[in-house]
Amino acid sequence: MRDLKIPDQRHPEKARRADNPQPKKPSWIRVKAPGGQGYADTARIMRENKLVTVCEEAGCPNVGECWSQGHATMMIMGEVCTRACTFCNIATGKPPDALDVFEPGRVADAVAKLGLKHVVITSVDRDDIEDGGADHFAQTIRAVRHRSPDTTIEILTPDFIRCDPSVLEVVVEARPDVFNHNLETVPGLYPEVRPGARYFHSLRLLQRVKELDPSMFTKSGIMVGLGEDRQAVLQVMEDMRVAGVDFLTIGQYLQPTPKHHAVDRFVHPDEFAAYEKSAYGKGFLMVSASPLTRSSYHAGDDFVRLRDARHRKLGLA
Image (cartoon, rainbow, N blue to C red; front, side, top):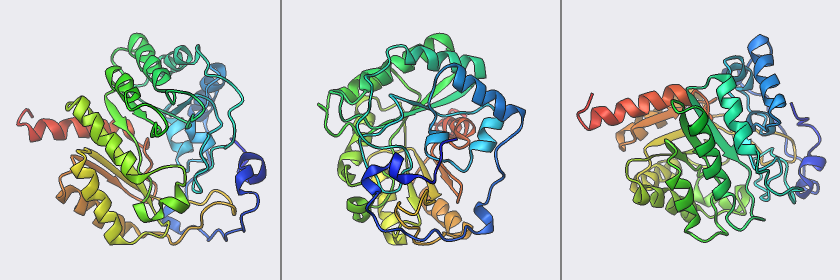
């Protein structure tokens, strides 16, 4: 796993930021250290296929549990992001390499070796590429579909904000089963938390996916504990539903280093349960809201429930 204690090397743009204290985590979000044979086997397959995972790069707290079950979230297009979001631990700067044309095949090979029934594929932002990596996403989807035709595919994409709007069609035409793009936080916190992004652009991207393919599941998520209030979270839910989002995830923000955005507070599990109840009341087909919820956490099981919920809604169950 990457060293999380040297922010100056991974995040040069944060080097001059004042340190923010890192409060002690409450008991409900402490996890066991990763280990065991399943974890080792997953790590070996990732190394053999020369793949990057968001599990490691972002310092996900669930990596031990997921990898022990052979579930890893592939992160394509390199390990250096062109954005500088203050919540994120993925390395930032100028990506050193062009896209690897062999990467889609290696992802497909890893999915087959792991025997995944459901795979989540995400990426760094690549604002240095004309199409933002849209065609690379499409090639990866097709490669996995060819090698493992029974595997359902979930993608977690960038916002393609600097690209021609038509690049989104390239990704949608590749037919992932779930199109995920995270809003990450409430609009009022974007200037600090996601300075390179725009809330309504991200919302419109999700809406456009539904316009291009109404049958495609769309998914988005936010973190809490960044300084938002409950009313702002409920408004984000309303905005997502107007955009046709099917699946909402809400998880606790965890501060990677002292140079990152401060944790405003640790949200109690009871509040997450209340958010989940509100979200279902607003019409989401599937909601995952808990302190340890992440976009790809239990994504395979959640996809089955998502599909079943649609069938029930359409009277097909």
